[in-house]
Structures are given as structure tokens and as C-alpha cells.
Image (cartoon, rainbow, N blue to C red; front, side):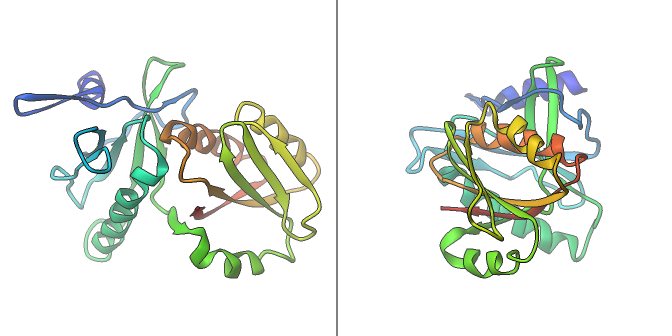
Length: 225
């Protein structure tokens, strides 16, 4: 069953038209199996106005949702569809299965099979709308802001002082944050440039997920600019 699902995610067939969806890659996923599922797809399609095709017709509200996003898309292209899915899930949970969750489907290269990242509780927000009010509530705590400008520029800033700024890359980001966690437990939130590819977004999300056991609290509010 998992092998069939992998083929479905990588090479989804729609009627007579073959559509290829390139899953984002991760390594050593904590979640490698999800049961009772229904899928949604966000394809890369240059024939569409925004180069995306959003297929959600197979979603069932009472199941876990596997959201398959082409890694070549940018966050600007993907974000409206993710906001739609989150809103739909929250409305469904009010009346149906409160335990159903949302997952991104990924290609776990370490096991050559599927891996999953949960995003059920993530709230996708625009930075210019809600960010200032949100940050004002964090100034009295040890809270780091992670600003992902690009794959080669990630800025870590301690909100309480606004002095300590560590600029790193997506490749060395994990070790930089680990060194800060050795000093004290911290909380953090992430803000992302909408020009990032979905692959880069998933790479950072998977690294953060691995650090949650090291006294790191990750806020479910994600901001985009």
C-alpha cells in the first residue's frame, strides 16, 4: 500500500493526462506512516496563470490529509492554497473528526520512501498584517525570530534585545540554533520570504522539527512577506 501511495504522489495520473509532481526531499523523518488518509495535490503547471494546479477533490473531512506539493513552486504560489486547506480543516473539525491531522508528503531520501511533516496547527499569516502585535508579546521572553530571506541568508534575532543577530545558511542553520539551545531553553517563530521554493521551506521545517526535543518551543504562527 505504501509503495502504491509513493507512486501516486510522484506520478499522479489524471484521466488521460499524466501529471508529474516532484515531492520535496527530507532525511530521517520522524513520521513515516500515516493511516486513514485522503490526498490533495498542488502541481507545478506552466499552463496555469500562477503556474499551479490545485486538486482537492479527493479530500475527505474525517480523514488525515496528505498534502502533496511540488517542490519547484514558490511559497508565493503555494501559500493561498495552504491557507484554504487550513481554514477548511478548522471548519471541518468543529463538526467531524477532531483528531484528523494535516501532513506534507515528502520523499525521505534516507529510507527511499515517504516521510511526513505535520502542519495541522500552523497558522499562515502575512507579515505586514499581524506581525508587530505578535512580536510585542515576546519582548519579555527568550524568543528568537528566524527570518528566512533566502537559502543562503537566514537571520536569527533575539527579540528582547534586538542586538544578537546570527546570519547563517540553510545548510548550517541547525548547528547554529543548537549552539544557542545549549545556553538556555528558547522559543522561536519563523518568517519566510515568499520567494523561497517549497523545497527550501520544507528543509528548514524538517530541521526545526528535529530540534523540538532540545528545549525548543516553536510557535505555530508563521509569517510571510
